[in-house]
View 1: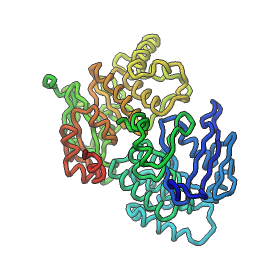
View 2: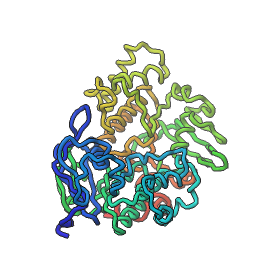
View 3: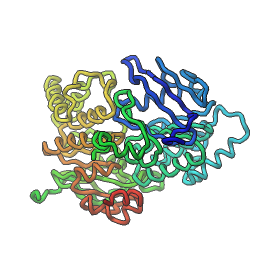
Length: 242
Length: 253
């Protein structure tokens, strides 16, 4: 690994542009994620972080540029194709099916799989989140915010992703719960899943990640080792409020 | 130090049960007129339920809530709003096809004690409030075009437009980064400076330490600790139940 980037990235984004009817949001994004990396994506609200995750999971169309996954071009591939190829998205606000059971929510993450190891993966998810073990039959909407985030991450893992993208892990969660979830995210990463973490608590994200990208107005304003980004004077002033 | 403050809101043994679970379990505290108080505590500790009890969305199963000396337990939410208690919601639901100004005017038209005012007056009130929360330049925009921090501002504007004496804020800073939080804190200070008492729920300690004179920690529906934020955040029980060891370490210089 040089500077934390391996020679053959799992995800390679080149000069990506995308937007909505109201106008473009992303203007030529370059980004790489190595197979074993935990990458933080930070920036102000409206900078384009969630839009970028949307493009990476096929929910928002790229207007130009390219996305490749493990060497294969997947630009504007459909969401279900990207899930099959190993991209899982844990959306902002969890987006659970609130009146369905926790177990069904988790199993929905494996909806496209036809292999025989789904139950085994469910056991692994419950090992990561033991708090969910005795709540499998509960309606997901009745769980606490932290537990709902566990279900959302678990649902993503049930797709057996190579790349897990988590949007706003800490939103509305108690500090202690955030720390616990960060530890679990790091464990998932150590066990071989690449991660993109979008986070408003920039300090938490930079402490957890190997590398970081700072998005400003739809462009990459800064990227590098998370520890270096954390010391950048502009970042300290504009995001950390130090 | 400011002059001694008179109690405006008094909670006595407030209890709310869902099934067999007491979500709020015998909570007692006072909020003084002109104070800014933060409520913190683990997810599921009963913070939002407590706000729902105060604003009348949930009926109490026990205890009493007194507002300026009179019991408001059992009153309907709109009556409580008209008595001068305004609130925001965690999940904002503005009228998406209407402008920012129209959304703020709705608070003035329907929420305040002087309701049924003429639309012209409601819009004047809306303009004042939008200036206060820093949305004046965006008054004519459709709500759907607003960023998340601006949507939170609008949520506060809608509540402030009801001319509350007490404003209840439920996680209006969630999803903001530190710099956006600092800007939102200025907004809360501006509202408070007009004489409004503020009771807010947040998980972001920058908010609690930044504006609150007092913090109340809820855990399992009960008051675990209360006092000055800096003291409460060093309380070992609060670290155990809520903040976690990592947070406590990060705060050390």
